[in-house]
Length: 88
Image (tube, rainbow, N blue to C red; front, side, top):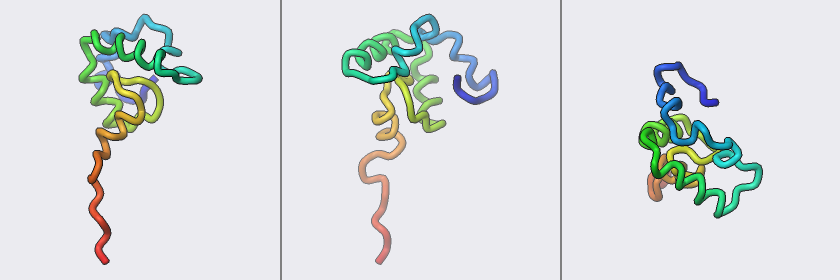
């Protein structure tokens, strides 16, 4: 369960995933098929934007959130070229 106040995470009650098995979104051993199935649930979710923003903002490092894997969320937070080379 994510940390945060009730107002901040109230959108969770409206998530398409609320009636799904948590292992679909937080599998012990992720697979491409499981990832695709979880993303399909997210695709029809009315709170996809809130879920995705929450996960990116809070640096969620596990599971499918807002239709994104941990690597995809990391790429949103740290896009290629975001770092500037150190001054010499």
